[in-house]
Length: 265
Image (tube, rainbow, N blue to C red; front, top):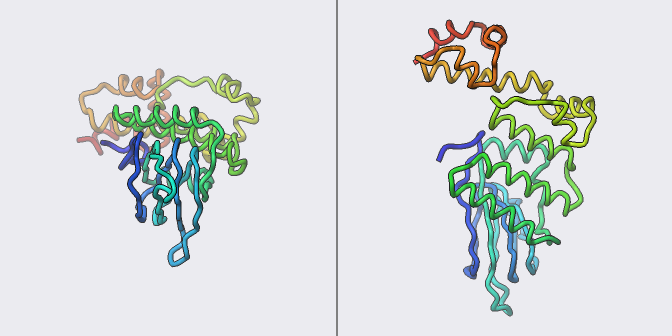
């Protein structure tokens, strides 16, 4: 399946009656949720360091990182099976999430609302089964928001809300946007929204969205040489061909037609 925004999902699933032991070093990120059962759990994220050890009772969730080592198995004195949900993910986008502090959970975390977490995992897995990696990525961000709330640490609700918004813009830049309505939906003033957005994205909302739209337009006019430029502009969210041409030339140094002749198929 094609990657979504530099994020790949190598594995995901739900095991309602799992009991086999797991010992492995992970080459990707993963979020795991035990909704039922008891675990003998050992982990290490630092090479050559003795692993930490805890006995866990569901509901509990943990995150693994590339290079991390995990061993978990049914407790020796327990015959209960596990209800195990997991989603593995990798790519530049998760690396950026880690840099921004969205994957700060370093130890297993007991959760207070397992039904809510099961609903979130179920939604992600159904999306991935249908090939909707964009919805899977947004679902992961919802899980991280929930875990940050449960853990009481991390970058906070504002950063996670903005991260979800940035993902939505990258997914569908062609959609019309009302920034005042977006600020109201976040329960922020418009000025506060614009300050937070610029801090998170490195540029103002309009500039960020135009750059995404123009990047998509550049790819579109090169990949589809028979598509009229006006239709390409409309498909990418520009209803004014003159404004589109002006912004395109400013970003790429060529007007759209010349760019197509230079770089098209």
